[in-house]
Image (cartoon, rainbow, N blue to C red; front, side, top):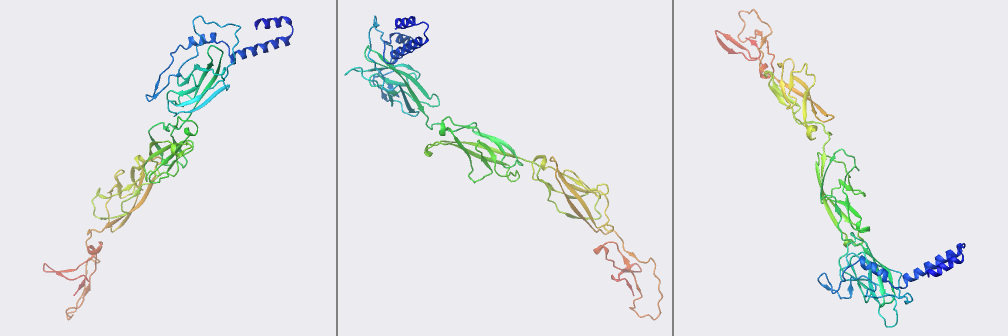
Length: 463
């Protein structure tokens, strides 16, 4: 062939057309030799050096599947008999596979020992037998080839997530005659054999109670090693009591669905469930994770007074005595719920108050006769930021004490009597006043005669 090419080139060194025809002819010859059988002695020697591996025979697979000796992990080594030569004049009859390429699909859960493919080649002559060999194998014996039938047998378990495609080169020969080769592809098909996986088994997160509805605060980061629909995941909140405060959006984030109120519920304990989308509902796989949500307090509640709005005290109460204890509560937490007390217009106030415990003290003497009811404005303020406050008017009723003597309207009385005035005649109406009230202000009159006191009633009449 080299001589022919050289001769044609010399015939017209200047003719580009002849050169092009020569190149095409050369490619056709090489293609014919490669696909339709030529001595493989040179190629086989290189293959033998690259893959010097022992043939497998009489194997036992998964301890329960004895394999016949014709399932071999063998490589085509060519003709390696000592002294074997190939005559350049020897023409080999083409031996070809039925297909230009073979492609098989194998589910990853296929049991070892299963026949997963077959290659076939045309018979060389009537009654002759073909022999199949593996020339290249990136599965390292995962697919065992029968020399006689061309069947492939799965030798061990597959895993789609580890490797999805295997490529083998298979050679068929007949005795010492020509050989052909073909590519064989094994495509591993995914099955739903992996659970969804949460990044964590449990999550803990804090959310301000004034977060608006729709706020997303936790990305759950769920993955599934499977492919396609088997690897797509739906996440939902599962609540036994039907609580709908939270939901999971399409991006896998936990979001607020209803307004929060820490004073109603300060924390939530949820279970979130991830389910893949396998077409067969019965084959769908699920996983769960726990989520603890703590609601952070904000200062959204004012102090509320719980003590009475009025009190009664004697007017003779001692100074610095505790009049009453003012009480107010704030349902917020922390500093938002701490309350301090103050009085309005303290410069003229009769009272003072302890800022922390709310004790109200008397600072000035009381006089019911001047003022029988005092009104005090008490303010309760929390320590939040900004602080919130509420006020109430406390009515202090002063209870009378018997601190006033009766007093006559006149210090001196004088009258003249007729000698014949009958006994029992009313001669004079005396009047005495008492600044106190009630029994303390009622006046009784007595007549003193020679050191003796005689009750004269309450009308003040002198007879």
